[in-house]
Image (tube, rainbow, N blue to C red; front, side):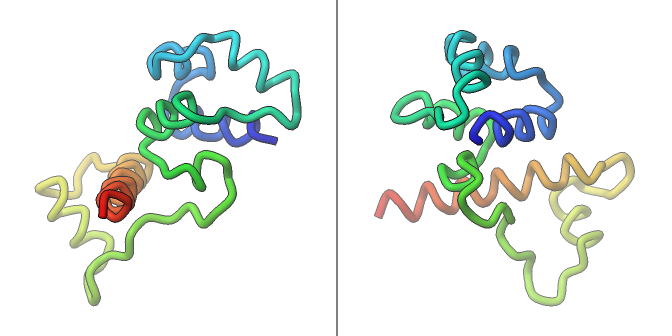
Length: 115
C-alpha cells in the first residue's frame, strides 16, 4: 500500500503526511485519498514532486526497489565519509547521514536519466 510507504518517508523526514503534501506542493486531499484507497498511488507530476521533496527515486517512492544509497568509496569507513561530508562527525545523526546518501543517489539517478 503506497500510503504506508508515504508515511514512512514522512517519518524519516520528521513531518506529518499533511505537512509533506503542503511543502511538496500537493493538495492534502491526495493524502486522504491515498489513506482511504489501498491501491491508490501518485503518478505523473505528483509523484515527481514527492520524489523531489523526499530526495528519492520513483522506485524508492513506491517502495518497489532497494532503498539504499550509493556505495561509499572503497575502503572508506562511515566515520571517514561523515567527516568528509560534514567537516566532522560530532552532532551528525544517522538520519542526517542517510538523508545525504539518499540525496546523492537521487542526483546520480537524475543525471543518468538525462543521458
